[in-house]
Length: 93
Image (cartoon, rainbow, N blue to C red; front, side, top):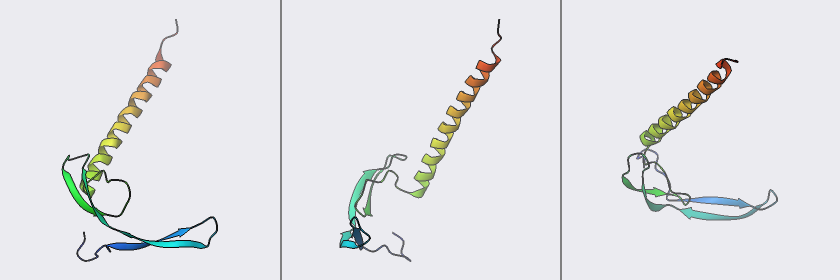
């Protein structure tokens, strides 16, 4: 992790019930998680708090995937617009 601003190995989590009153507090610890990056397909091991497995090994891989998703979204949008324009331009006869 970052040398200048280290991430604590444990952190307290406050759990609230149905009211605004604190029900209890627990401490969660970081653990080593091994996963395969969906962009570069490299197996990585990182310290993470409990939760779902990460999809990307770095911010660079996350940015690459965001660009791919945006390009796919724009391509589909263009296809949809072209179909709509073609439907409007059909000669009536």
